Length: 389
Image 1 (cartoon, rainbow, N blue to C red):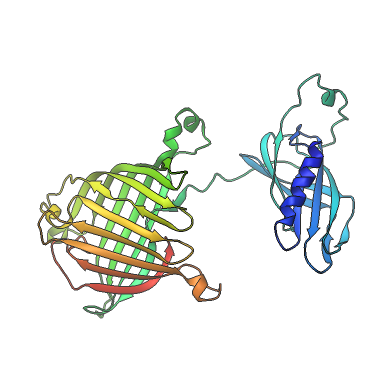
Image 2 (tube, rainbow, N blue to C red; image 1 turned 45 degrees about the vertical axis):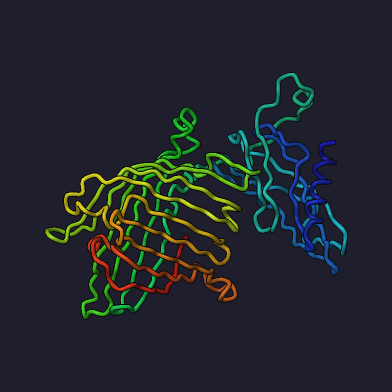
């Protein structure tokens, strides 16, 4: 019964697209370590022309556990060119054996074929069961597991971009930003303290580059390390359309200069996040950063110009047009700033040849750099490329 359901599911999945599909399935979701494995490849042709698929022998499958990977060989009951007529399907049986060391949830995916990933559970069968009593002798191990690298713990934090403008002289502005997850969510400590894998260390740098001068000096840079807790999906409302989250921690900001040009501050902050829509599609979001100031001897009046909240609002989609703004209102009535950003995927402008985003940014008001936190310079309009948003 299980095999029939899996085969029917495979056929339904294949029929959803108006093209040929190759679906890997198993007659059982549970297999013992080192057991012979019996799989099926269902090739469905939903086109108006015959389909030919080259079936290698042996066929390689990539097996992955939580900590290791392996390549296993399976033998198809047919090999060479497999011809599937229009509106027909063909089922190919695959036989092989699993590594002895593979246990727990695993995934299998064929290499060299455009097929799905199959999930299985590998574990000892209950003693005394009918399946165990009739179980044939285990075949020799076909492959060995090797340790796989730990999951990538670094991701983008704030937008990464390089933009150029000409107001007040040719100049450029670029920003680098990444965050590092401190604890592995699969580790023993994270299993005991689930919240600990939401602790991050981040580093961001924003630099202003004067391209109009002969020596092309950097006018100023802002270096911003932070240590924080972040969970952007704490709760959902209205059938999941609204997501609530929070980020909270401690941060430092300085410009790395000395004497009269030295600027620095420390802060504690909290950032509630609100997202309406699909975070990976069209959405509207708000993420105000609410903070205090600690250790501002070099710029004691900075709150007059920057205030205590960085108001971040955005609307759009990373796959299309995207707009976001950062607004600051100082404690003095005439002080503050506005940064407006607009981006659009370069892949759509180039027919798929380019990556990244075309980015336009406007900045007006006080303190685009930490050096000039109390100066209102010419408003800037810059155009360039965003590497990550």
